[in-house]
Length: 454
Image 1 (cartoon, rainbow, N blue to C red):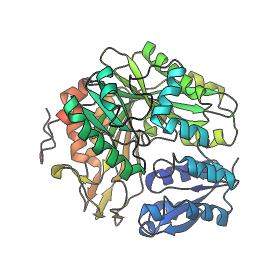
Image 2: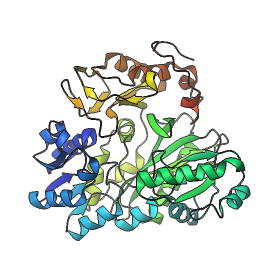
Image 3: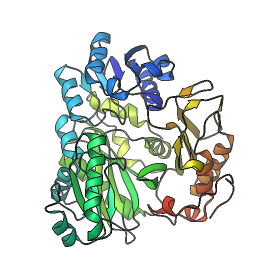
Image 4: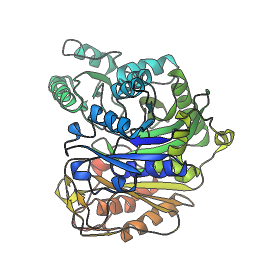
């Protein structure tokens, strides 16, 4: 087992990793930027080192500074969390070159699955369904012929990215040139890579992802699905497990496909295989995230396991326990991402001082957060400040428990999307499970009246 792990991240995920390490008797090192000097991850780690100013490019994305911190503290492993450098093949390679274990897949896997066009070809060769699209990146010389062959609508995606950046839906030939230029520019600004690929746009799909764990002994286990269909601008805001759209037969089929994807690329560690599910229950591989996901707690809640502890153990060459293959979901779990944004003002970020903070409590209610009363939310990073997760006997029970918990969640001094979540949970289409990825687009949010519903 590792003796000391440096967490190359911040916020709630850094705290989450610290807790897992403590339970495994592993020493921890936090790195923090100058504006995070009062953040809880820097307080609760065994050691903490400032690695630069607030600008993430000079701190949490500063590979030399992070490696220096690991060497200075004699850390024998680095956990990247999610975001920042978690899917950087360069960072993984440098860690290994410096004899520091990278708690994530190797450079080859990150490069293969991180490039969406290469990943699609790899998965296609494994016999897993893939959305029709370009086999390589496209440019203005070939984009029209490929789009016409596939048929409109099509979607342009950044080959090196995610989170909705560098993504455009195109409904006609007249729109495609401008959409391509816009997607390419956004991709270059977001990922320093302007490569764009094209695929068929699946109308009103559901977004279903499968959690996998894989050890260094050839064992790969699919751990069921998460429903991630409730998204705003291609970014998830509410996740749940299990999905109401999937029966046991389809669940097994999708789990088997996710395991096939992982086995094809010799995967090790925690990963997520993401699919689009159409209205006829046809599913298509979309991408693989080679890291732990923001929404991993809903899987933990319905299965009763600690994914991050098992992820760390996999990279320390421990075998996955045999009982894990027989795990079945118990009840239902929902996660609401609590973002510091103003839903009444086009979701403008709402940084600032939290003047009052009270977390909900009770049976089967979990809050993952790094903030507290008196904490100043910086403007430099992602707006998510907490995750509220509940577990109920069934979906109706989980919805009611989440509504109760949201009522008890008090965050004053800044705006949050807590009222927005309440309206979603009260919406009749959400309650019946009759939704797709266009739900938020069509959702009638009534400013200042959180008790109204569609």
